[in-house]
Amino acid sequence: MFGISEIAILIIVAVVVFGARRLPELARSAGQSARILKSEAKAMRSERASGHPAPGPRVIRADDGGAAPSGPGTAPGPGTPR
Image (tube, rainbow, N blue to C red; front, side, top):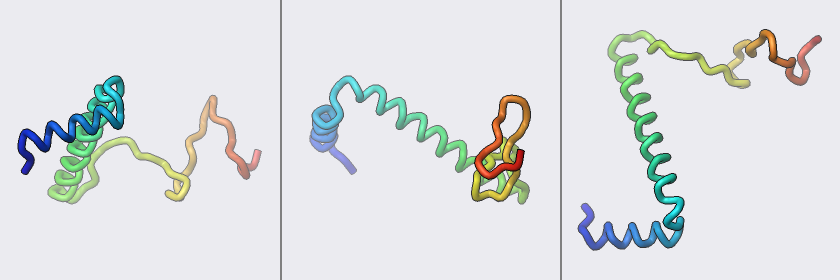
């Protein structure tokens, strides 16, 4: 894989490109992304094993064809009859 010298070169390049102040922020972001990816992969494995969708919030997208959320505090979108 990588030796000590290659890792040191990558760290130096990262410091030069991103700056020392942004590295902790980038590391946190990478850690959060890894946790999300791991949890999604786990959910997909359990869904495949059980044959049922994993419980969780349903995300409604415009291309989904689902109904938009409505209720107090929500304004009608463009093209919505009033």
